[in-house]
Image 1: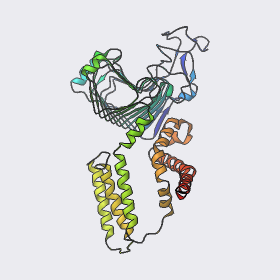
Image 2: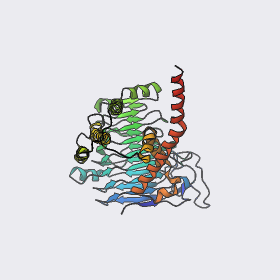
Image 3: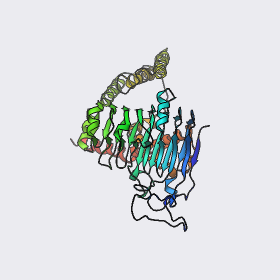
Image 4: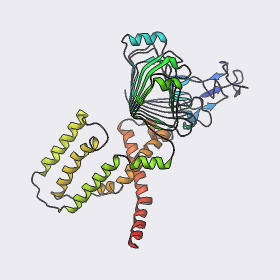
Length: 439
């Protein structure tokens, strides 16, 4: 089954309410743990001693904007049990292409008992979380509270705490995109590959608090960690924590123990400096690709058009074949001129040669896409993030899946690019021509 959605109804109560009258109850102080006053909806999906469960291509929506909020509960904020997805003592779980959003507490909570960790070390299947998006959580986007051997790849974790859409002042601590905290058992061999932790509330990633000894062997490979509203983007108390080729936007806080035992290799860090961002872009290898593209365009314009027909289509077929072989084999599967840049040459060069040697009719659609190509390039990520964060306000989105969602992103991206091209790029072109003409 794909394209399914589980969504909490409007009007669900979250927080503290008087158990007799139902009125909002504001405790005199925190912590407050009188469970007679607690209101929450528990779980959209709960896996307990449920091995080898697979959850693919669906959406979990806890509907924060339509919640009815009471008083505070727990240690900080509104720590009621309202989770999108809760995993406990369940080996071999696989989550793929799942979207979990808009949770008053956590979008996903993973907690295992110490006995379960023993089972993991004896060879039980690992939890696999792949190509999923978790967003807009009042507390933590993901809490990993106990477990062994989980592998999380190509996932996005964004908008925690005060940055959760619709939370309206009802956030709870620690307000992180990822909280690795051994409150449910020891944690070991936890791996994150190519993940993005973006827009944490107080912090983006925190590992090993408050008991560092119970957390070890947490590895981040090729990840982006970002926080602009908190003092730190990354806080580590755990021993033997490893970061390889990661980029961190924001502050870093390393406990003394973690400094001795952790490994930080090829880490790029930056604050909110405009100059730092400019220098980072200026030094990027991506600019080499831009330069090569401009060189190819210049050569193309200089070469005469010769309608020789013949077998130039064979060169085009060859280029397409090489491209798809590279794609299928994942050869040179990396960014840069010796990765995807080389792939692109096998598409672009044969296509340009074919165009120069054959009589082709001008396509208004292709001309239009060419005109908006640069605005599309610089705005499509922003457009995608806005849709991802505010899709609950788009009625059609909740019924869409697969190709339908792709079409929503595609149409919205083209529309935004057209606006930028029409309202900004074209007027700036005219202004620059006037300026150059006066020189």
